[in-house]
Image (tube, rainbow, N blue to C red; front, side, top):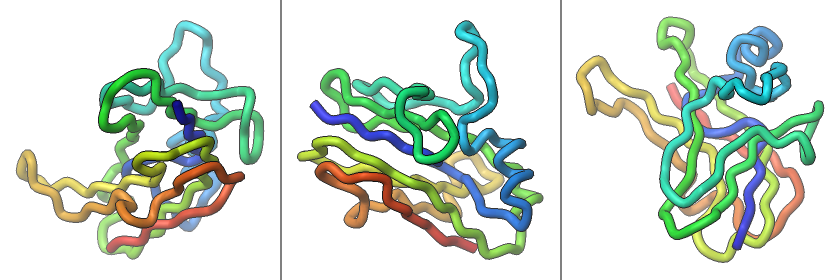
Length: 147
């Protein structure tokens, strides 16, 4: 059984000119107070994985996102949408810190998908296949860049 802890996680996150503004707006550091009955603002998907904000392990601050394999399944992920008008015409870097424990199959990685206007149209995609985190490692920075 493996656990991956992800600080800034999965799908369409951007380092903007004002990183603080982006963190407050998107809760990229997961520090926004959430009541026990309130779901966090990220969408969770995949099968066989638990995805939640973790207050026991963090890179900075007091929280991180945890994705933990709990049963058979191919992947677990969390995503958040970013308004395209804030990114249009820019070269963006999506950076996150990943900590892993005992990954012997697959990998932990950042995931970035840019959807087009037509349903199902993918304009850009990178899921770090072949270069994601494996094994057990302390927090390490990873980045994806895309226009």
